[in-house]
Image 1: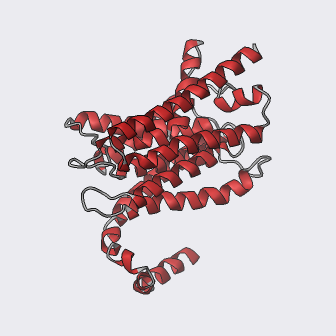
Image 2 (image 1 turned 30 degrees about the vertical axis):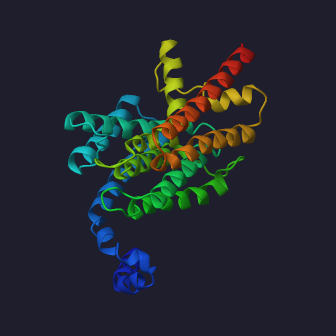
Length: 310
């Protein structure tokens, strides 16, 4: 009943609330209102993933079931809601497939990153903040306006994550679990697909790699542990302590220090991504190079951790 009352009051005072918006934002109200159906569709998909994660947290589900549902949800977003990347590839079947893989990859990367208190939530907050800053400070080539809608999606997530991190910071009182990490990974994935980084006729096509730079650390961590597990003949979804965070602890760091180090690596990769819409090809090359150097440093630290443990 309280929820229904809140909905009635929100509808009643919607026009009054819009009147309080800054003058620069009121011109975008109609455009944002037109996204309501799309948002509810995404919320529905996120809810399905949260229920999936909750069932896995409570009972433990076979990895085939988890992956199957993740691909089904991702396919719904891509093929029924039209949420897909372009990346200057004029092959709809390929861009659709890549979009589905992107969503599933981010869902699992943040799920696998949730191996230490405060880690997955903090990295997600940093990545979302950096993407939002980039979308607010650069212009959409299609209309020469900041991308308020997608930035708002990301900033709402940042606010929720900061509130969560207050209680998830080690030693944690509450935990993200699969339900939370699935939601976080999915929301960041769809927001990154909704955003426009270069446009078909933009002057900075290299800006399309911005999400890869921002999300380089969680994606690298996922790929590295999957490779190790497959090389050892184990399931890629079998948990272990081969993650970057565990290697840092093996080197002598405390868990808090390991988490903060990964925060720093994420922020370093992300800061360069903010510059991509503003620089030429040489500048873009330097940004990508800096991201690769951070990942190389991560690889060196992981290798040292393996030798010390051996």
